[in-house]
Every structure is written in C-alpha cells, then in structure tokens.
Length: 240
Ligand code: ADP
Ligand code: MG
Image 1 (tube, helix red, strand yellow):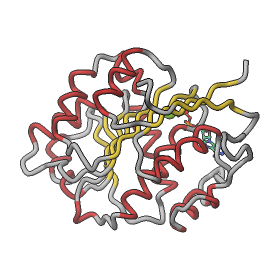
Image 2: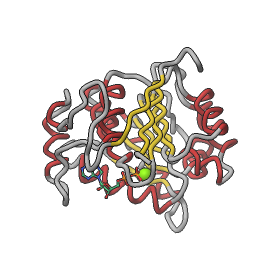
Image 3: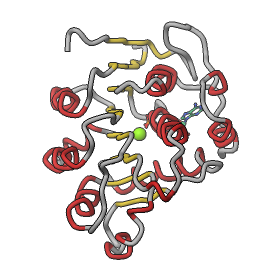
C-alpha cells in the first residue's frame, strides 16, 4: 500500500477544488459526453461545478483507474461515480442488448433508490437500461425477466447475489465497472461474505472498480485489497 500514490486534498468552501489545478473545475472541462453534460445541467439543481471529491475522483476514473474515494457524507460522492459509470458504458457503446455493464452496490434500499434517482436524472439523455435490485416487496421472478437486458444495476448485495446464483443465463462476465458505495457501511452491516461471493462472479479484468467510503477503516482497506487493482487513494478532508 505504501507504494501506491496517496493524495489528500483539503476541501475548500462550497465547490472548491483539489490539486493540481487549485481552482474550481466545471463538469464542462471534463472529457465527457454532451449527453452527460446536458443531463447534469437538466437536473433539478443544475450541476455545473464539481465538488472537491468529484474533482479529485472523476478525472482518474475517466482514465480507467481504480479508486478508493473517502469523503464525508454530503460531499457529493454519488456523482463522483455516476458520471464515470455513464461515460464508461457510453465509450463501450452499450445498448440494452449488451446486458450488464455496470453494477453499483449500496448497503441499504433507501440509498440505492437515491442513487437510482441521481443516475436517472444525470443519465436521462443516454439510452442505457437501469435496474434496481433491492429485494423487499419487489417480485424476484418478475425481475428475472429483465436482468439480462439491464445495463446498469443499483443493488443491495443480497439481492444481486440471489440473481447471480438463481437466475438462469444471468451473467456479469462482461461487467466493465463496479462501484461499492458506502463500503464502510456495507461491511458494518455484515455483507462482507456476500461481497466476496459477488466478486467471484465478475471478470478479473478489464474491470474497473470504484470504492467509496465516508470513513477509512482497516476493514475498508482490506476490502480495497480484495477488490481494487493499483488504486488511487483520494481523500477529501474538511478543514478543521
Ligand atoms: P455523499 O454521497 O457524499 O453523501 P451526495 O452525492 O448524496 O453526497 O450529495 C450531497 C448533496 O450535494 C446532494 O444534495 C447533491 O445534490 C449535492 N451535490 C452533489 N454534487 C454537487 C455539485 N457538483 N454541485 C452542487 N451540488 C452538488
Ligand atoms: Mg452517498
């Protein structure tokens, strides 16, 4: 781990920026699709300027690197992975017929629904199929009809694993990008073994993995070792 680059940036007020530019960066300055830019601008609060964690993570993610991103709750981690997910599938020219290309894992149903809403809004000019796999009242057999033509999953670990183990012809062998959101909470909630089983269904490479966490614990580093390859460690810390 010592040999991996570690970057810690201070969060400036509002939508401040992170080195090396030391200035606020607009989403428009990124090498991303017009569809994503327009989606961001069409959101309820139009997103134009990146927050510090977005500024730190998105350029590395667009370059195909694995990431361990740590920043407090409310710092804008959702778009820090939603933008790279949309761009990754856009660059691979995914259509619903191509099936699963991205999976975003969340510890709770409520968080998964929030991510789904952000992804739907920012991705509204793209044509990817997006599915929520969160269990509860949702009918498993009904979901089974759709998973093979879903490009982006937002899922709780248990439900995704249930499909990987029980849905005929459902595979994630072509998955391009995996996101573990709130990895600290995923581990706190006892999902570690399920995560390890999910990882066994995914291609070793070329798969990109983005791991986000509000806190940096040894369990999170342990999960990072398991799931990431040569990650960039990007931490954004508030000024005391
Ligand atoms: P986290 O996952 O780090 O807790 P969220 O992704 O949920 O944070 O974002 C927290 C809030 O910040 C949300 O209300 C979101 O709309 C807002 N937000 C995110 N990115 C930006 C941005 N670039 N500009 C303005 N507001 C933003
Ligand atoms: Mg979040």
